[in-house]
Amino acid sequence: MSISAGATLPLTAAQREIWMAEQRLAGANRVFRVGDYLEIHGRVDPVLFEQALLRVVSETEALHVRFVEERGDGRQVLHGLGDWSPTMIDLSAEPDPERAAHAWLEAAVARPMDLAGDRLFEYALLRLGPDRFYWYQGYHHAVMDAFGALLITRRVAEVYTALVQDHPVKPSPFSPLHELLAADEKYRDSQQFSLDREYWTEQFADRPEPTGFVDRPSTTPEHYLRRTAGLGAVELNDLRAAARHARAPWSHLVIAATAVYLHRMTGSSCVVLGLPVTGRLDQLQRRTPGMASNVLPLRLSFRPDLSLGDLLGQIADRVVELGRHQRYRAEDLQRDLDLPGSLGTWYAPVVNVMSFDYVLDFAGLPTTAHNLSSGLVGDFTVAVWDRRDGTGLKVDVNAHPEICSDGELAAHHQRLLTVLRAVTTADPTQPVGRIDLLTDEDRTALLGMAADAPPVAETTLPGLFEAQAERAPDAVAVTCDDTALTYAELNTRANRLAHLLITHGIGPEHNVALALPRSTDLVTAILAVLKTGAAYLPLDPQYPTPRLNHMLTDAQPTLTLTTTTTQTNLPHHTNHTLHLDHPTLATDLTHQPTHNPTDHDRTTPLTPHHPAYIIYTSGSTGRPKGVV
Image 1 (cartoon, rainbow, N blue to C red):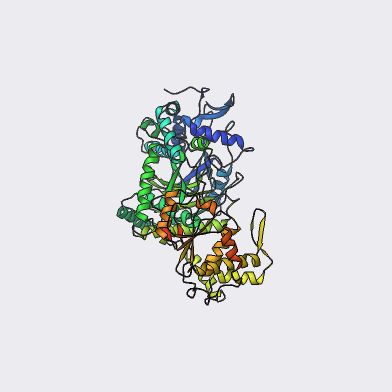
Image 2: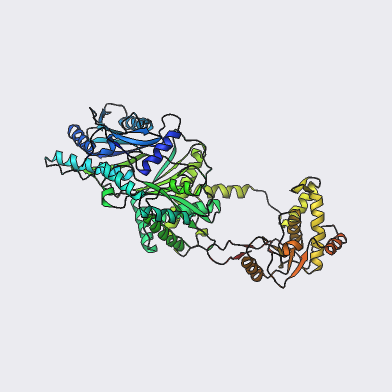
């Protein structure tokens, strides 16, 4: 049953988020404008096309609404279409019809739409020649998402074909808008909503910091930067073959490539990507054009030995879980946990893989689909389009111009394509840390820099510090609270401690555990251990006892430097221990030489090939592992 014109309806949760975001913007803004155009190859009958479009628009209640505010909340009111008709533009007489068409399209998608006063859709048929037509579709994202727009596109093609062939037009397949709204309201009052909230709040209870390879924007832009490239049919076939070999959907390889790139660019072991979903779980929702889509966080964990196959397995598990809980709004989760960033944009980048069947024809005329704008980008979005029309993939990257220049965006784009191609050819057992990120341009630039670089003398880390202490002895080297040490003072302290450690047999190929609070003594101790030629093992006294015990047992340090206070937090172990705050040690240090230790002083000569330190992984995916 349809609702009559003038009826006031609630908003879906997705619509409400957009409505609230618009209220925060000053004046009209294009960021929620979405648009595509369909290139129709052949002679279109404009009269029948208009008839088909008028019919489908009349069937699509989501296109009949305006937004109003009632008691501080957003509502939508159904309006009649009035005398609306699609725009028909003939550009065939222009010197360059294609350029003129693209200029018109760019201007159209840049025009803001007023939620309260405008029609929230726009259609135009552009004639470039007798057998070349562009059909433009523009919407405000508050009334239409990509899935809904595809339903409309398919229905227009179906109706136009029937009219051209003089066949009866099948009844509308669309469900009325109020059923979509009722389903959304029912969900938010259901037990499933509570279960979904519980799932998401457990997943992100630790409130991970957002990790991206661009900064966070502070403004909402008037436009976005975009770079586009295509992967041909052969490369798409290679991608699908690699996915079959890895027993994964090819879309998971795209997600893996983006995650690997983000991990490698930032070094973060926790990567959170935004993953758009349709938000439609039943047939009623799948046959109702409107706005229901959602963007949810996909959390992935990285470790140094993570293989591509393990990453794909992790993605598969997370995507299945995400799909089960996809109707819970990311904005709700962000408010639940008071997560950082603007609403809906604390994850970055967003990875939007759109694999829709766009093999459409208009009474036998083939088509090619093109995207112009997908709405709010946030800071960085990767969009991969598979139209299933034999043309391959199109890979777009979109970025906020405040935080990413066009040149930087181009570099990110090329590296992402490089990683995607590398993932396509990589063996699933290959560690993700060995996947090549460098483009040909990056490699040429780096090799050029290496060729032009002056020769570097072979030296050691303590040797570099000692050279700086000689160059600038009176410059401040380290500060902590009210304490400041010059390079000369720090070097002298480190030398005395190093000579004392050497008397305890410490030298190259040994390691010394440092269980010290953050202080000038910690920096002194690090330098002293390095000056002996030994490696240092940092121990955070606040770590759990089992972790500290594992590190000490695994690394077997020759000696531990600590303090009497910190010692109480350490597990019992049999290694030799020196307390830096013990009066006897302080007296011993005053009798040690102040000169830089040399190989004559050390137990054996020191070379740059000796270990400098041992660091342990977080152990978030297993036992911590020591890395030299």
